[in-house]
Structures are given as structure tokens and as C-alpha cells.
Amino acid sequence: MAKILPFRTLPAPEVLQEAIACIQDGGVVAIPTDSFYALAVGVFKPAALRRVQAIKGQRDHNPFPVLIGDPEDLDQVVAEVSSIAEKFIQQFWPGLLTLVLKAKPNVLPVLKNESGNIGVRQPHNLQICKFLEQTGPLTGTSANHAGQSPAQSAEVVLQLLGSEVDLILDGGETPGGEPSTVIELEPELRILRQGAISQEALEKVLQ
Image (cartoon, rainbow, N blue to C red):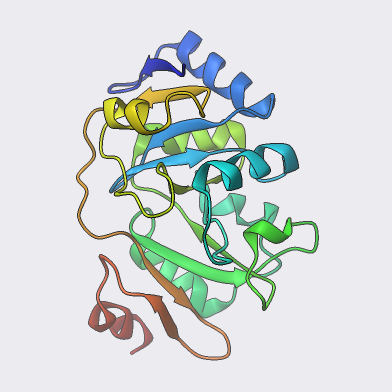
């Protein structure tokens, strides 16, 4: 059964160390994000990514989104960041906007779409960003089996996935609501999933 660690305020050093070590060892950690809990594993850990695939279960090829702690970490997974992408980052990060950008060649297939692009976001949760800065990019797919409602608390994650994940970082109840808006920028702006950020807000940046 998964271990729950307190993460509601600035976590104690030993909590951070245990969670970071779990990620480095290829573990699966459930973390709070801006809307729901997510399954976090190192994006360069093939075995850990296979575990997340097994947990999520039957689903169409829908690449796992990636979370980063700082925009400077984009260069670990993204080949290039256009000037338009920079504008969206300045306006909406950290927050509920996932940018689909050209992935670096070494990014694993489970994280890329058929065009070789990867979805990346910087979450608004400051504690999680600090965690991500120390672990490097992590997956951010919702903490549930395919077809289930996403979890908004550590207790629900434990009920749904307690025997399938290694650690749960208990950041309290997450807000829920709409997920991140997902946009692709090349060759033109295309909304792949309408979420918390409206089309009107996106278009204002382009104007």
C-alpha cells in the first residue's frame, strides 16, 4: 500500500528527500496539481513510464503531459521554443496552459504525439514547482484509471490506486474544476483541449 507524506505546507527536508529518491529509483508518486492529483514519474525512466501506462489502463494513444518546475527546464525535453510560445509562457505560466512543442529526439514515444510533439506545463503549485526543480521533468497525467473521475485528495488516490503507486504527497484537497487548456502552436494556433483558459484569452496574446 502506498505511503502518504504530508505536503500541505513547505515540506520537511526528509519528506522532500524521500519523494525525490522515490522518483530517482523509478517510483510512481501521486502529487497535487492545480486541479487534480497527478501520477508523477521521471520522463527518462522507461520502466516507470510503463508502470504509469499499466495504471492508466486501456486508452487511445494520448501522450502523457509533462510538468516542469521552471521555464528554463524546457530545454530538457523541448527542441526549440518559438517567440510565440515565449509570449504564452510569460502570460500564462505558471498555470493551466499546456503547450504542445517539438520534442527533443531523446524523449520517449509515450510522451510524444504522431507529430513528435510533447505537451508541457509549469503548474501553479509553488511546492510542487520546487519539487520539480529537484527531480527534473515529471509526468502529469491524472491519478486515476482510464474512465474514472480524477482524484482531488490523497485519500481518494489511496482508495483508487493505493496498491499501484509508491508514494502520495498529501497537499490537501485540490480545486478540481476544468483541466488545463492544451494548445499546439505550429503551423498555427490550434486548441487541442478547451480547459480553464479561454480561446478569447489566448487570442489576446496573439493580438
